[in-house]
Image 1 (tube, helix red, strand yellow):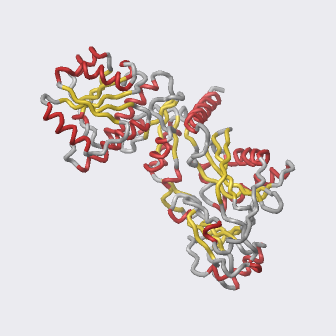
Image 2 (image 1 turned 90 degrees about the vertical axis):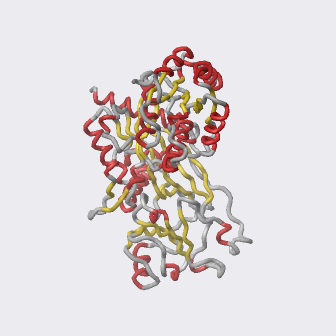
Image 3 (image 1 turned 45 degrees about the vertical axis):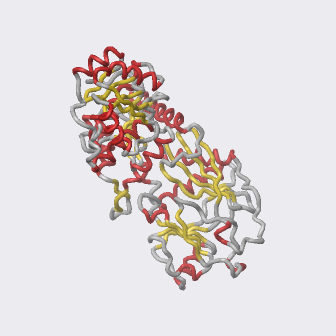
Length: 482
């Protein structure tokens, strides 16, 4: 049965959920409820029991599952089902027409729903598997597609999905004209479509490197590309070819330098840090020769060549003295990059289509040249770029009495030019990059690019994401009609 139009609330019969005694299914049940709530759906679990004692027993079983915040439990007797359903819609502050009762039993439920004005979703099985969870989510998404919302299928790692959904970026209820539903790779994609847009974080599923140093994505990601190739009416955001560029720092360096060159041609002081690719490093003559030949001076940053998709990709190090190259815990091959003093301020630029936003972050403080380093500084310090950059406190006691220069000197006109040039060359819809301003020259340096960032500081990110996906979809449709 097709889902009712525009669902905003669900009353779930308790029997629909997996048995509380089956620990293997509890996680799936909680995942189901959490995904519904994060998607903007009001949820009430309805316990039907003939006696008050039986109702209390079932409610206690549900409470032991640590139901997500926002999920309510109500009890009723079977003969009072219609009255209880009407009360549930009042509790949700929703019109009955946008609420559905999800039940295993249809005959009595159909009559009660008709009296209460609710829609009915009959399911033959308990929601105790990922497949059934996705089927229920798809019911909700389909109801909104019928009222002219775009349907976006997506895939990303669970932690990223929870993060984005908790901030309203993956709504099921289409508040901005787009509803998002996870793709079920356990079923043929043909049976789940038609999708208007396929959204992915392909770098979550980078599984290996091929002989030509090109990234290889999982079969799941490859199936999305195959689906959109067979269905050109479905937009893939973004194409795997464009994402390739930001995974390999060696390839990315060329793109960043081209963008910086184009910005300089327009009269703006933009550069990229001097960098070289290395297969090994050590406190020896070979490394000294590489540094002298490239013009890189200590301190410098060592980054893995693979920029994302593996745990090692974000393990980096700042080397302040030559002995710091000994036993360096950075994956090889690597990118050796000149460190730029930037007053301890990093600017993260988030880009969504033609929109951008800049967020300021605390960063590595200004570091002295190797010849003037104080004894209190370490030879090297390692860090995880996903967590936080080493700041002043890390380098005590050297900075206890040193006054760090204030301000970053960021020029938004320059940032806009950099963004335009990167967007033109990368061809990405969703990306972010880091830029710093050199302390003594004011030159803006482009440091790194990543695909589909968190957008944590992006204003009204939920609406912005829906808007850019709609614009991308309609633009491609218009081009196909030419």
